[in-house]
Length: 267
Length: 250
Image (cartoon, rainbow over all chains, first blue to last red; front, side):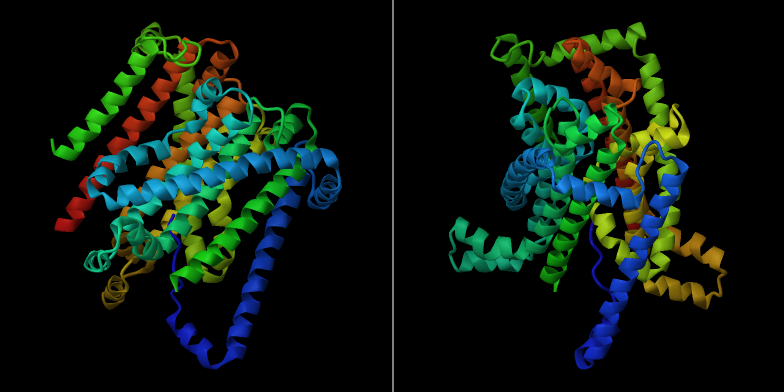
């Protein structure tokens, strides 16, 4: 899931002296994105024509989205999801970075933990949800726990790998300068591993959102996940499609921002 | 066996033993968690009695179909996107945010497109897994050393021969990683689909046991899923390491 750095070295040089070229390139990029979005909407319309019972078309969905954004009921559910998501994201990013830093710095524990982490990353965690419900009870804490289960592991893995691959000279410099462990972390480790941590956070962000929404789809009475599963059960296709569209837009928008941040740090 | 593996084994078995003790001495309520030994015994009983055979066959065959489809189409799609840099740049945010979209919400849509049979579920696994393969293919094709491509040109290889003899072998480790992830995601997608929506398979059996307060079946099945997925992943991991070592020598 690594992100590919930009490879166009010549374009970089060209961009330095002639700003019209850069301008044209960003214009072209915008145009490409628009064409892609247009293509996706066209596919959506085609699917809609093929099966009108299961999905609403693009125009009608946008209308429903506007309606939803004006309704109190929607905001109640969105707030419930938002609270659970915010809390899970906070726990998985802070906890993930902390655990990742420790495991990365202490080589032996890192080596012990690495395969366990990979195994945890790939198991289908949905099947464990009943256990989470039995332990945490129905309510927000189960949702948060489930979101954290999904989101924390990629953050740990990316942070740990980043610390392990740190240039050893920098760590030696820290020792020569007699920095305390907390100072070493703040001045050397964290700045050096920042780009990878942001990558980890981006992946963690996506998976935390997924975890919370799935958590709400099963055994919950609140939140966007509940709106989705309820829309399926009572066959409320309009609200179902609109909520899904909103979720997709939120996810893509956040990822775009995080990707841009990541690019900025890599330079 | 080296020290690292020993410590790891010690940690895992220690953890299991602690849970076992906590359950046996009643610190953890039986309604919350069963002792691991009891889960294992009941799982053995379920296996021998053949009660879950049907669910197993259904789940595993769906996973295999979804996995094969996602690897094949993911590779083709990845190659196409790789050939068009502008398309790729536009796709990047989509690929990056893909896993936050719960694809299960498309189940009703798939049902209306494919009918009420096994295919909607397979499509969920497929749609969930294909992105991992696309991303891995893009990575792999990026890392083919330009020198090798020049070599192909020097030898005046045909387009087909260049792909078969140069590009594919050079990209293999990345494609392998993609396949590994695609298998994991096929499992996750299909089990989750069964769990939330469908009326059959192991995922459904777990949800059904939860609804009926049948903790024994539920925990036995969870243990089974964990064992199968972990075993598969470890096997692939070992195979991958062996492949990499051989490349290192060659």
